Image (cartoon, rainbow, N blue to C red; front, side, top):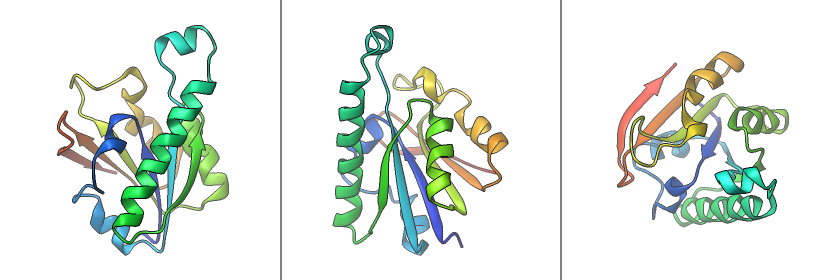
Length: 149
């Protein structure tokens, strides 16, 4: 049982109206939950070095996830992270000694998958000595695959 769970939350997946049922048992068992919302820039924001709007979006995403978790009786902490998701996780791990990392990602090949998500689970597993579970969601917000390592 993981007691300290770090959750990486990306764009559209934060808009779901609830904590996904497949993730909920992991969070119910946790003593502490830390959510990271990476600062994800669009192509144009990246090109023009406009990080401010992306940071505001990440903060809104974090508040949305907190709202869903609070509504279900969970008490998360967390912060906006770096654009590079591996860096965002590394930064979070300096403040939060997680014993499980949960990745909420779009299903590979889906219309919502973005360049940042390609091979992210593999990179996280190779970079950190923390068990990691990747949940892959379809366009409707349903888990289509769970990958553990």
